[in-house]
Image 1 (cartoon, rainbow, N blue to C red):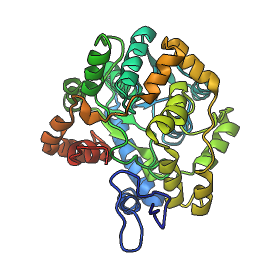
Image 2 (tube, rainbow, N blue to C red):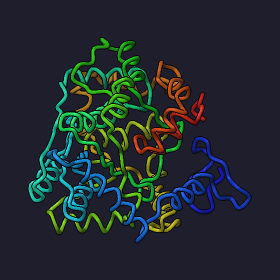
Image 3 (tube, helix red, strand yellow):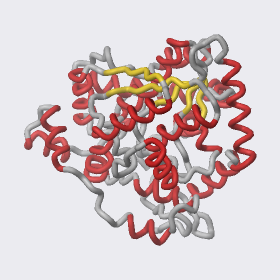
Image 4 (cartoon, one colour):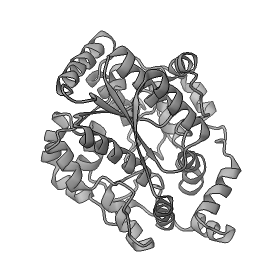
Length: 381
């Protein structure tokens, strides 16, 4: 198995290639993005110019920006940046899938209270949501969290539409968590609904999914844009965690995406055991590329077993009403791929010119455009 000479990606990563120096195409993608999204003084100028436009767009309205909150490091720090550094009027938005950890709930409260930021929350009907989760498990696809991720994104748009807000800040940083390889995951509303229709009752009322027609309306009619400020900052997650702890009493929850219990379950149990997907390959490679972790350290850390609280597995099986034998059947069913089910993928590809305009205008992210509109993927590899 060939391993990249620069990061720790290897030849089993989907769509990977290596140049003559043994460096993978994902490192080359990182270098391209590093140039496209400058940090330092130049990055700060870009953010402040965008902030000025946000304040202009927010005149006569109660808020300038919506920021999704999970209790995690990235979203908590963005609240601080937006309010205390850039002087924005922030509305926090949260999708509650009923699986928040105690630490996540406490983190959200202490940061919002100290900053004096209002919260917009959408709470899902837990029986409906558990039905969708069961359908995704029966479909044998890795996107167990897709309904949560889509509902979170939709909640941001719902908050914007309610208050006339035109801007959403997202907390992703390609320098600390990377960009997941195409072929690992896919998500759209049609995908979730088609699976739930086949394996469940197909009814989706309280779970807000990003249906294409509504999404286009929010972008084209409501003119709601997305921005990732961490792309333009020298963002060191370890330093940020220390800052949040000392400034706000924020608590670390033990690992990337572990602030939510279903995210913890999928990342530390379901994905690695059933699908052989370990997101640490993505995270550690990003940290190596950005100089925040030494390559030899990453190669050793990736060998460590992922922590997992078995009580969580018991909780998942209990809430979803699975017996031990039924759970074994779920875990032993042959893995499937998103191409086995109806999706919007071909529609996104046909609408590529339209989404390119949206990309250039700041309405969709580069990662969405590249993965969903440009890449014509027909298999996992």
